Length: 70
Image (cartoon, rainbow, N blue to C red):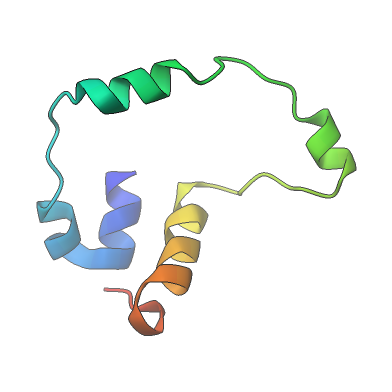
């Protein structure tokens, strides 16, 4: 994930990352199901993202000025 961010946002984006426990985020993530079926989503035409690079690039295109990348 960090390397995907670096590819899109550069070293400046990665420098903003802090690895520190956050109880609020931990509680949210722990409420998510550990396993789930995706067959229905596939039947409806949804597709899984290819990889984390695809996710980060899509976010940048959608949310950053002019789809800015590094």
